[in-house]
Amino acid sequence: MWFTIVCPLFQVSNFVNKGTDMSLRVASLDYLGVVAARLRKDAVLSQLRLNTIDQIINEIRAEEQKELEDSNTVDKKLVT
Image (cartoon, rainbow, N blue to C red):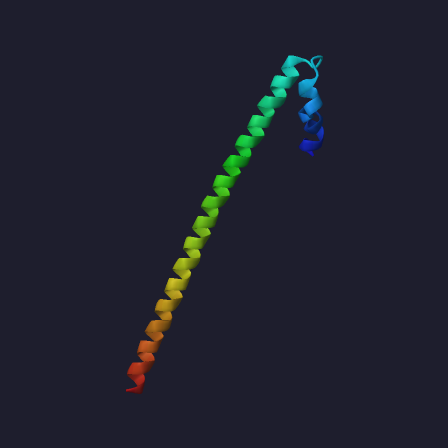
């Protein structure tokens, strides 16, 4: 929703038009910088979350593998 409100501010014609108030142009560029910074921050955080999820999955798989090996060892002892 915010994009539909702010979108007209980012039109190229507003930056070429000399009649457009300079403060509006500066505010538009400033807001664009804020949006870009937020997108970068979100990208970094999502990558960190992905790495954490991958680590948890690997730990679970290692535990399952260890349990499987332990149960196979117990089964072999029972057979002999």
